Length: 262
Image 1 (tube, rainbow, N blue to C red):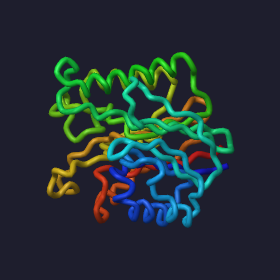
Image 2: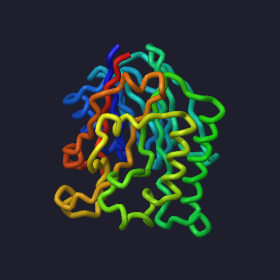
Image 3: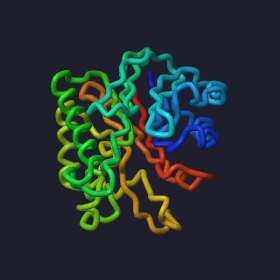
Image 4: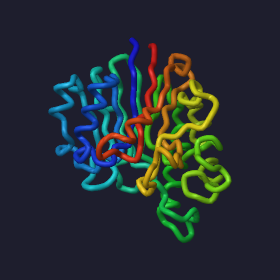
């Protein structure tokens, strides 16, 4: 089976239902993972997506905040939902496709504005979330799995518009990158996007604060697709749909795609 997967922080699926539908019509991924849905599960829109062929859904919802969902053309069943760091937030959902692949969809805490857990509780929550992810993968090595989502960390120097200027900015600080790498190593994950696009600047998020985000191009690569060792070589054709950031009433994130031959 060959299938294409996309991950996208939608920043309110109800507010942006129409551009989600547009992406499904124009790009037709087999699986779409959304983060920051900002909706309880029973109010996440489904009818328009189902009419486009996405009749399978798993989700965890929360009013006005967080929230993760997976829509699929491929039959799937829910395969768990973890509350990492015991935050009581809807930040993780897993689904198992009928080909046996498990997809983990994460929305890692952003971490607030100050990179110091002693004065910023949100930063501590982010580090704790990542630590529990690491420990989970250390105890139970994932197999035939894909991990996607807004992980809220741009790990590489060329994943941000200016490495030196962002070293003290939350999402690119050394302690966050260390935690990010520990999570990857614990599960022996491969960064599929950078496997396919190994060189050059690459972003998936541009701030709403920039009057002309495209010209300024002060982006960060916060959205990721990973694969376990047993399926990493099946992944190919990674891409970031930068133009989607410029659609009407956009999210500040662009969707990231990868295809798997399994």
